[in-house]
Image (tube, rainbow, N blue to C red; front, side, top):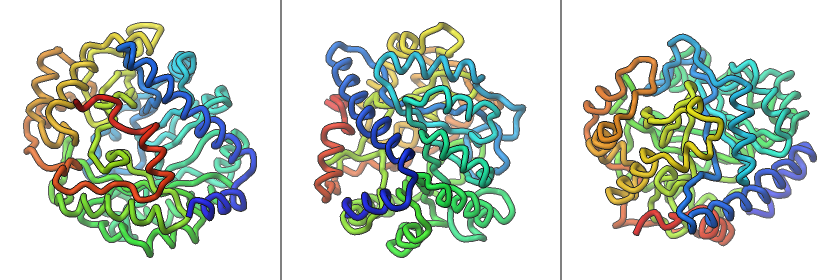
Length: 396
């Protein structure tokens, strides 16, 4: 299937886009993880992958969203984005995830992509602002992949995303990306109303549409209006994992999961230190759903220095690793409260109610299920995860 996927990408994508992906993301991404592993031996924690919510604004109102999308616009300036990326590049980083809100609402996003042709960017988007002209500009810069959210049927999409005609508008943006020869991904926050998308027929439809990879991540019950009724059961989460492993060995489409290693043991990217998050205010946070921080990009010229010296991030990684291999927010909201209080971390939301929301959460299962692990079947996924995506000694 990997050979068939490679053939698809050779035939369907712009050659310069494919080269940028192979070199900036593939080769340099592996090299950045090797440098991360070397730093860990010296006791230095700086993630090889940075996820940056570049703006809070969004035209949709998704169920369970934790971002202040309806608040006054807050965004990281183009100058600061360039500073963050330039600093990270000095330490071997080449991959950056751009989140929102809706990243395409940031007026300087393309300026940043163009300023760093030696990097690779994954843009988490609802796809509705990707016109033919925008898709063509993405093709010209060549160093970004849109990861477009699709949450279900027309009815489910409108309900989940809080908009009208959401699916058709999103599919129009997806088609523009495919027509431009981009490497295109589709992400789904799997919950009770769209669990039917965890299906072979859906993946085959994505292949027919020209999609090259899919990312199924389970719905997180967090934010000011957490929709607990949407949460998956432990059995459903296990089935999502089994589905990903089976389809990787069967269909010519890449399938991403970020919460299990090659042996099928659960992990948290934040705990392993492979990624941390920078919010639209510039706050340096453990991960996107933990909206507390003791440091900001405005506290110093070097993000590297701020992250490597952060006692808050260090304590969060270590305490969470001792508590669970799953999601500490879902399983141990009490521990998150304790860590926030211990470090005097500030609420990084505009609504200033994150601690109250946290106290209201009930503990629930996440991806950690030691009784039923599902190891990788396909040799390439198994090899890649074993060497470049695993626990990195966090769980001892």
